Image (cartoon, rainbow, N blue to C red; front, side, top):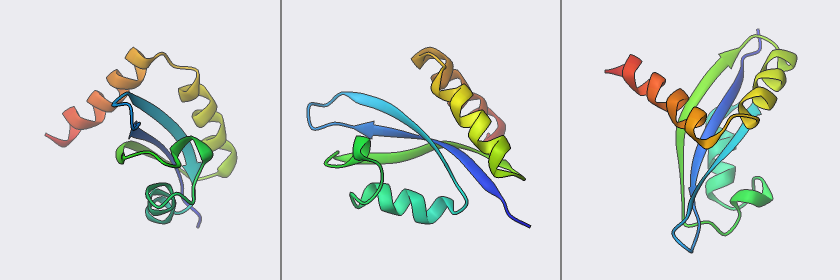
Length: 91
């Protein structure tokens, strides 16, 4: 059974500006490693610090892709609230 992940990375640019990157994958560790080593999306290449801040799991690629697009449409504030909701669950 396949598992797909939708994730949010916090990316620190050389200028010191923080941004969010949202993506999906079937191997979260591999994809995070690719982003950190400049192999992933162009958005993350050359950035100083890349942290995994949030992820969700899905049973199908279609569901994960749909959720990824939904999150990409969120405002910065909504993304922060989503990340906070996960952190609150962990505590």
